Image (cartoon, rainbow, N blue to C red; front, side, top):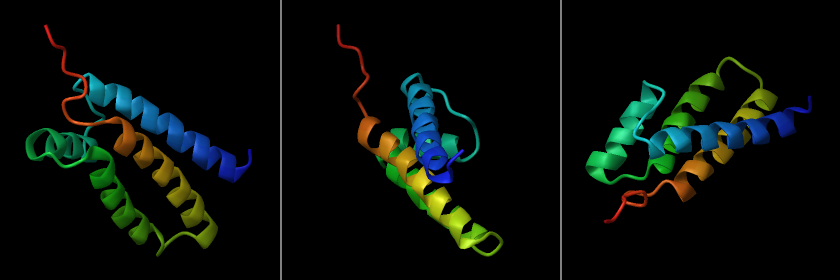
Amino acid sequence: LEPGFAALIGGIMIGLGLLALFRHGAGLGGINILVYWLQSARGMRAGYVQLGIDALILAGAALVIGWQGIVWSVAGAVMFNLILGVNHKPGRYVGVN
């Protein structure tokens, strides 16, 4: 499998899956619960907060993996966080009677 294709499609699929979970008030645990809470309680955009946290994780990973792994990881993380950042907005999914 081509690493670039896997990184981009993987990031999109993870983003769509987490978007569906967030729309229903769920998460995967850990950082995702923190991100969801920050959006709900503080109004911070989930995708952008997650991108910042991912950047810190990738900075730490740069110490132990090669540059190609970092490039593909960044590509996947950007796709994942773009899906969340663009599509998950506070108040968007509130039903009105």
